[in-house]
Image 1 (cartoon, rainbow, N blue to C red):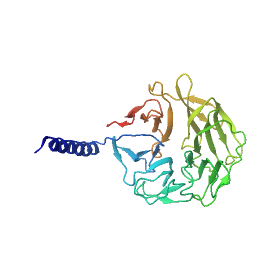
Image 2 (image 1 turned 180 degrees about the vertical axis):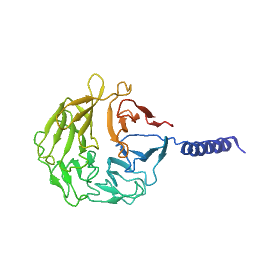
Image 3 (image 1 turned 135 degrees about the horizontal axis):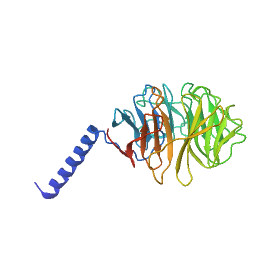
Image 4 (image 1 turned 180 degrees about the horizontal axis):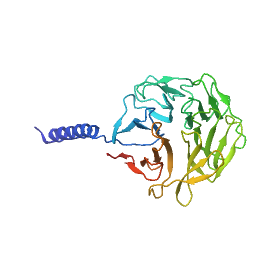
Length: 299
């Protein structure tokens, strides 16, 4: 056999072996992180990226069944996934997605409108209500201007929020798990909270906020920031009292996404801008790293 042909054959076999062993060992690379959510049954942590959904389950990483779309604005409720973004090569879905929905864990997706028109980077949904809020970047066939919109019927109708009192550049969104009228926004000026579907907001925290998340108890709001160092806090909605949450040693990094296990209220996950992922099973007192700079770590 000729040397070049032999070298090429060994290279192909090495790549195939690496692929097979990587799948067997649950090795996954997170090229980007565009969301963070637990499955409704609490068994799996889902992370959307440029090349499909990654799953962390029982200490092992894997790729989710289904198309390797570029998911943006990905959110999960108790029985559905919603997303925007861009289709994988060979997909019949239009680019950009507009709003799409999956009821089978991301295996298949149904279009809900605005296909070929809008890519929603900022989107959130109520865990129990499926109420969806988005920041629309530009006018489209269902929204006559840019701004904040809400739908409570999977995109059949959209309502624009007046957003009085909301200041700064929107960075992240969160929707109350049980009340579709309660929404929070993290902006460059702080954390803002609304009880009337985004028509008016009050400030809960000042300074740039990077992530925001309603605790599934419906009584607390989590948010992250970065001043001299990364920070994570939990605010009681009843009286505004704030509790500082312990963070792992993440250095010059910050929390980009927060999620909570719906079947174990003391289990939380955080993902950082540098693609580090951690899980806490004691309410945020201690954290275990499960991904380092985009590389999935085993149990």
